[in-house]
Image 1 (cartoon, rainbow, N blue to C red):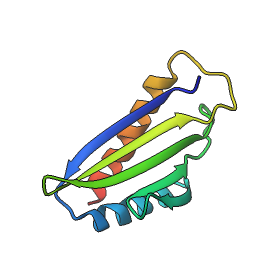
Image 2 (cartoon, rainbow, N blue to C red):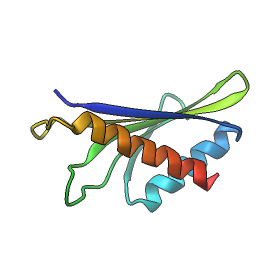
Image 3 (cartoon, one colour):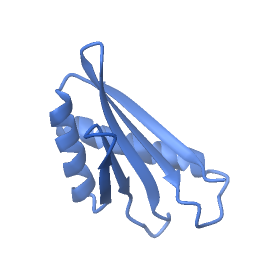
Length: 106
Protein backbone atom coordinates (compact mmCIF):
# COMPACT_ATOMS: atom_id res chain seq x y z
CA UNK A 1 0.00 0.00 0.00
CA UNK A 2 1.41 3.41 -0.96
CA UNK A 3 2.69 5.46 1.97
CA UNK A 4 1.78 9.12 2.21
CA UNK A 5 3.25 12.11 3.97
CA UNK A 6 1.84 15.58 4.53
CA UNK A 7 2.91 18.97 5.80
CA UNK A 8 0.97 22.17 6.44
CA UNK A 9 1.64 25.82 7.18
CA UNK A 10 -0.54 28.81 8.08
CA UNK A 11 0.54 31.88 6.15
CA UNK A 12 -0.29 35.59 6.18
CA UNK A 13 -0.21 35.99 2.37
CA UNK A 14 -3.40 35.94 0.26
CA UNK A 15 -4.32 32.56 -1.29
CA UNK A 16 -3.70 33.76 -4.87
CA UNK A 17 -0.14 34.72 -3.95
CA UNK A 18 0.47 31.41 -2.19
CA UNK A 19 -0.81 29.44 -5.20
CA UNK A 20 1.43 31.44 -7.55
CA UNK A 21 4.46 30.75 -5.34
CA UNK A 22 3.56 27.03 -5.11
CA UNK A 23 3.50 26.87 -8.94
CA UNK A 24 6.85 28.68 -9.11
CA UNK A 25 8.48 26.39 -6.53
CA UNK A 26 7.18 23.25 -8.25
CA UNK A 27 8.32 24.29 -11.73
CA UNK A 28 11.70 25.55 -10.55
CA UNK A 29 12.21 22.21 -8.78
CA UNK A 30 11.55 20.46 -12.09
CA UNK A 31 8.38 18.83 -10.81
CA UNK A 32 5.53 18.32 -13.27
CA UNK A 33 2.23 20.11 -12.66
CA UNK A 34 -0.57 17.80 -13.77
CA UNK A 35 -3.56 20.06 -13.35
CA UNK A 36 -5.44 22.40 -11.12
CA UNK A 37 -8.23 20.52 -9.38
CA UNK A 38 -11.05 21.54 -7.07
CA UNK A 39 -11.51 24.89 -8.74
CA UNK A 40 -8.27 26.76 -8.41
CA UNK A 41 -7.44 25.95 -4.79
CA UNK A 42 -5.56 22.69 -5.49
CA UNK A 43 -2.63 21.81 -7.73
CA UNK A 44 -1.89 18.18 -8.62
CA UNK A 45 1.74 17.45 -9.45
CA UNK A 46 4.34 14.71 -9.78
CA UNK A 47 7.76 15.11 -8.15
CA UNK A 48 10.86 14.47 -10.18
CA UNK A 49 12.62 11.13 -9.91
CA UNK A 50 15.94 11.27 -8.11
CA UNK A 51 18.75 8.78 -7.81
CA UNK A 52 17.35 7.63 -4.46
CA UNK A 53 13.59 7.92 -4.91
CA UNK A 54 10.79 7.25 -7.36
CA UNK A 55 8.44 10.03 -8.45
CA UNK A 56 5.63 10.85 -6.02
CA UNK A 57 2.07 12.02 -6.70
CA UNK A 58 1.32 15.25 -4.87
CA UNK A 59 -1.50 17.67 -4.18
CA UNK A 60 -1.00 21.20 -2.88
CA UNK A 61 -4.15 22.69 -1.32
CA UNK A 62 -4.61 26.34 -0.36
CA UNK A 63 -7.64 27.37 1.72
CA UNK A 64 -8.57 30.34 3.89
CA UNK A 65 -9.18 29.50 7.55
CA UNK A 66 -10.04 32.22 10.08
CA UNK A 67 -8.73 34.92 7.75
CA UNK A 68 -5.35 33.24 7.22
CA UNK A 69 -4.15 31.12 4.32
CA UNK A 70 -3.50 27.45 5.02
CA UNK A 71 -1.14 25.53 2.70
CA UNK A 72 -1.19 21.75 2.79
CA UNK A 73 0.99 19.47 0.66
CA UNK A 74 0.29 15.75 0.46
CA UNK A 75 2.72 13.33 -1.20
CA UNK A 76 2.16 9.64 -1.82
CA UNK A 77 3.84 6.81 -3.64
CA UNK A 78 2.48 6.14 -7.10
CA UNK A 79 1.98 2.45 -6.29
CA UNK A 80 4.05 1.28 -9.24
CA UNK A 81 6.93 0.14 -7.04
CA UNK A 82 7.29 -1.91 -3.89
CA UNK A 83 6.81 0.07 -0.71
CA UNK A 84 9.73 0.48 1.67
CA UNK A 85 9.53 0.64 5.44
CA UNK A 86 10.54 4.31 5.69
CA UNK A 87 8.46 5.66 2.76
CA UNK A 88 5.97 7.48 5.00
CA UNK A 89 8.73 9.27 6.92
CA UNK A 90 10.57 10.13 3.70
CA UNK A 91 7.40 11.46 2.06
CA UNK A 92 6.55 13.61 5.10
CA UNK A 93 10.06 15.05 5.10
CA UNK A 94 9.86 15.87 1.39
CA UNK A 95 6.40 17.48 1.83
CA UNK A 96 7.79 19.61 4.68
CA UNK A 97 10.72 20.64 2.48
CA UNK A 98 8.30 21.84 -0.22
CA UNK A 99 6.23 23.78 2.35
CA UNK A 100 9.44 25.36 3.68
CA UNK A 101 10.49 26.36 0.13
CA UNK A 102 7.11 28.03 -0.45
CA UNK A 103 7.26 29.81 2.91
CA UNK A 104 10.78 31.06 2.19
CA UNK A 105 9.77 32.31 -1.28
CA UNK A 106 6.87 34.38 0.08
